[in-house]
Length: 115
Image (cartoon, rainbow, N blue to C red):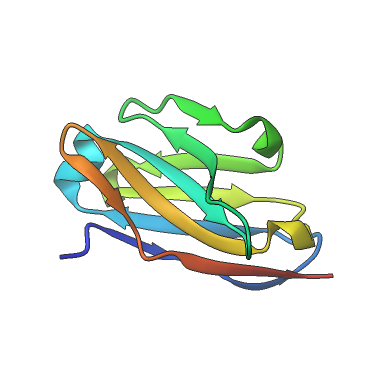
């Protein structure tokens, strides 16, 4: 059973924007904090942003300014908006959920930024 399903990745030109979506099972979404991580080729997975069940957000220092995490309670979905994309944003972006109902990862969605 897939608890988290990401979508919205693809090939984008530098300077563009995109929105990633992560649809979660209702129980997970209502209890757990949700987050986005990314892993670039040859690098470790790194935190982008998190959002609690109450909507409190937190960003990695290097992600502040161009990344916005949000959640839609009616759709059990978390979003990641990214503006002014750079080639170094190229990575697989993973949705994560962590809390009382357990820890889960999505399958990842590839984002490729062309210069």
